[in-house]
Image 1 (tube, rainbow, N blue to C red):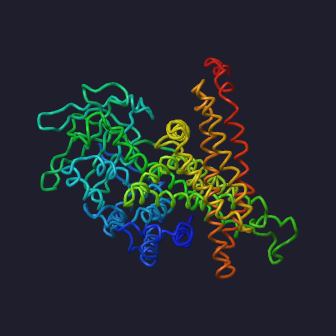
Image 2: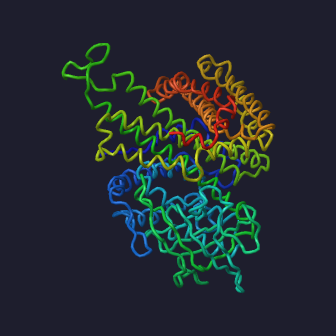
Image 3: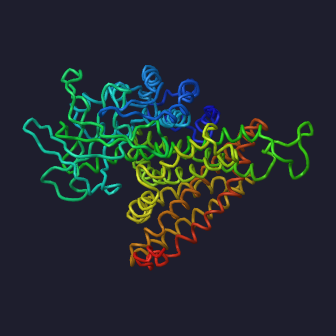
Length: 598
C-alpha cells in the first residue's frame, strides 16, 4: 500500500532560503513576529496529522466511496472522525482573519498545510479547503452576512460548497438558468439545478453554506446578469443556531473516474431561501474572489499528487529487482539489481521530482503574493502582487495539473505491471489526478484566460511585470559562474516569451482564432519558463548554502535536479513555441462535417 511523508525539509528550504519569507513579512505588521521556529512547529504538526490521520483513509475511502441516501451524502468510514479531529485542532482557522475567529497567520503556511492534506488523502483534503468561499463572502457580503456565516465557516463547523455550473452550461456560466425571485423580506427564492458541485452535501459539518450563482428576473442575459447568493442547507437563526431545513437537496452523486471519497453532487434548489452577496448583477465579480483561490488549490492538488506518486515510485525503484545494470552487476549478492540503476527509471523519477519540487516552489511564491496582496501596507506592492497573481494563477492551475497527470503516470509506469494493479495504489493517483485538468476551468480555458483575458487584454503589461522580475534576477546573478547554466537560457527564454506574445498578438488583430489556437501551447511554454525561474532561484539558494557551509546532500541534490530540469525538460519549450506560431488555419480549415468521416 502507498505511504506518504510530509516534505518538511523542502518547505523549510523554500521559506528560509529561496523566498526569505520572514524578511518579506517584516513590513507587514500582521506577520512581522512570524519566526522559523513557529512555522516549523506548525508544519511539523500538520505533517504528522496528514501522515497519521489522513493517509490511512486514502485507499479505503477510494474503494468505499460516498453514499447517497434520500438527498443526504454519507462520506466514507473514518472521514467524519478525522474531520472532527481536524477542526478541533484549529487547522481550518490558520490563515483566516481574527475578526471572524481565524488565527491570522500568513496564507503561505496554510498553502503548505493544504498540499500535505491533498497528498495524504486528496478527497479529504478537498473537504477542508474552503478559502474560495470564505474570500467571496469576506470581500463582497454585508457585515451582517459576514458575522452570521464566516465564524462557523472558518472554524470548520459549516462547509462552503460553490454552486456555479449547471447541466447545460459547463464553463459557460452566462448560460445559467437558476432563478432568484426577490421577496418582501429582502431574501430571494432560489430555484434551479446545479451540477458538478464538489462537496455539495456531506455528513461532515452541521450545515452547508452554499454559494449559488443565479439570475434575477429583470437581469440581462449572459454573464452580466448573474448574481451571487448564500443558500444555507439549514437556515440560521439570529442567535446563530440552526433553524429549519431549507429547500435544497442533493439529487444524486456522480460515479466518477476518481476522487471517490469526495462527493460530486447534483444540487436541486426548489424555492430555497437565499441571501444576496454584494450587488445584483455583480455575481461574476464576486465569484472571482472564489475562483482565484480555488484555481490555486487545484494547482496545489497537482503538486500534491505528483509528490506522493513520486515518493512511492522511489521506494519501489529502490526495492524492486529486475535485470542487471547496463554497466554490469551492481549487487552480486542478488540475481538482479534494483531498477533504480536503469537510466530510464531514473529519467522517470527525476521528471517526477522536478515537477513536484518545481511546482511547490511556484505555489509558495503565489501564496506569498496572496499575503502581500491582502496585507501589505504599500499600495504599490499590493498592485504589483495582484498583477502577478492574475498572470500566475492560470499557469499554476493549468500547468501544474497537466504536469501532475504526466507525473502520476510516470509513477505508475515505474511500478510496471504492478502499477496497473489496484491494491498497489498507484492507479488511484492516476484516477484522482485527472480531474485537476478539468474542474475550475479546463486547461484550454486556463490557456485562453492567460493569453487572451490577461496578457493581450492588458496589452502585455501583466507579462512585463513578471518579465522584469526575471530579468533583474538574471542580471543580478549573471556573474556567478556556477549559475551560468541556468541564468543564460533563462534570460534568453524570458526575452523569447515577450517576442512570441507580440507575434501572436499581432496575428490575433486580424483573426481572433489565433488566440484560441495558440493558447494551450502558450500556457505550457509559460509554465516551463516559470518553472525554469523557480529552479534557477532554488539552484542559487542551494549554491549559496554550499559555499557558506560546505557540501550537503540536500543542496547538492537541488542543483542536480535543477540541471536535469534545464537539460531534459526545459527544451520542450521549443516545440510549444513552434506550435503556437503555426497559426489557426491548420485547425480551422477542416469543415465541421469532415470530423464525421470515419
